[in-house]
Image (tube, rainbow, N blue to C red; front, side, top):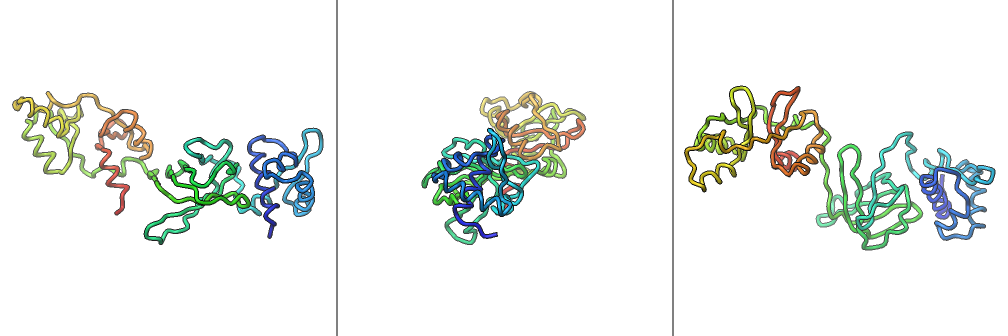
Length: 291
């Protein structure tokens, strides 16, 4: 179905206003949004009703509503249950707006990475040079940030240069652990613990007392102890006793939140209460960076 630019503008404004007000929308409100004469909007509505793209609602609180065909005509998916993907302009969230589709337009360009975002909601406040931030998306918690270089009110899309893009897998953290977790005996000497860490190319490990994990020790802990001249201490004397752990089924993006909240560099991972490994911020970077 080929629609004229003004018809697309009217339908887009109708959907956006309905999302905001949750009731039938008057033609005057649509005219105000798209900066058109109310008479022009009323005339167009007759054609759109004939095409089955809008339906009229009589009464004092009446107006117009979009139909399922409206979403198809605008290439939008009508979802019974949707997760809002936030849109921000210069770090300020745009209320009642969500990203419907993101397309990358210059993936083969050696220096630029441009994209368009099709928005359900009001984008008319965006101007060239504004910062747009999209996300996080529901599955992989992707966040894209860039500079607006174009705006198409007819299609309700923004064109922007991507400046930052972050995405974290939804897989459980247990899939990112070493197959054989490294531990250090609580009674180990500083020299013995240092050798274990260096040989395994790690900067920290859980401390084990028989079958129990009782702390975490790092190369930093060992370095501070050596600097103080306390070379005869055992690992149980210098380890960090406060253990922060997460469940092995926790998605990776939620583990990152725990890192930020607790201000730590390593987390113990457990499954059904049993220790299965240790993960660090560096481990996460190593796993998600593919080049």
